[in-house]
Length: 177
View 1 (spheres, rainbow, N blue to C red):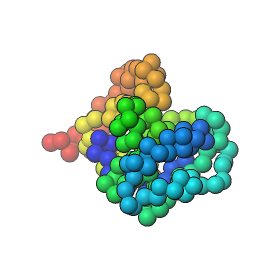
View 2 (cartoon, rainbow, N blue to C red; view 1 turned 45 degrees about the vertical axis):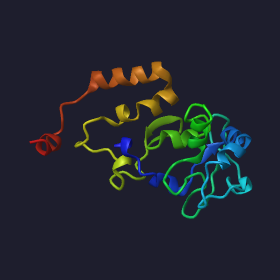
View 3 (tube, one colour; view 1 turned 180 degrees about the vertical axis):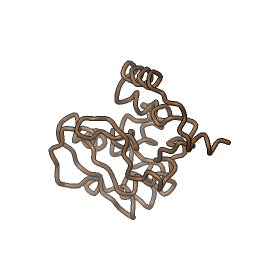
View 4 (cartoon, helix red, strand yellow; view 1 turned 120 degrees about the horizontal axis):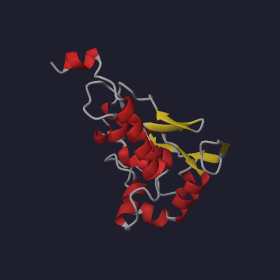
């Protein structure tokens, strides 16, 4: 599951709230320290110019990150996010500079509903749901869901799951024999 991330989802860039873009740009000098030769340190090339209206973002406005060399401008050649590395190396929370939609994937927010983004389902194990996995997606993504829902919200999700957990499917039972 998500615990074995391959960073394939980062190839296409991501939409970030405009406030997240501004926070990244405020920290551009420390982020640049953690970029390699496959990335651009020219911050004018980090984000698309067009801002879109979207109620799934806190401010209601978002902007895309640019794609360079077949990947998001913040993804280094080792598959690490420069915003996350910079934050961690400077004593911040690991996600202090990372856009929310990057943090959450393969969890998504669409039309103000939290769900599973099936973009890479069955293509990448880290972004797939399968009966063969021992850990439900919401448990594998505990930190990410707690980030967006808060501890109480995640607790409600756990309770919902416990109250509605189903007997393993016949396909799952067959696979485990």
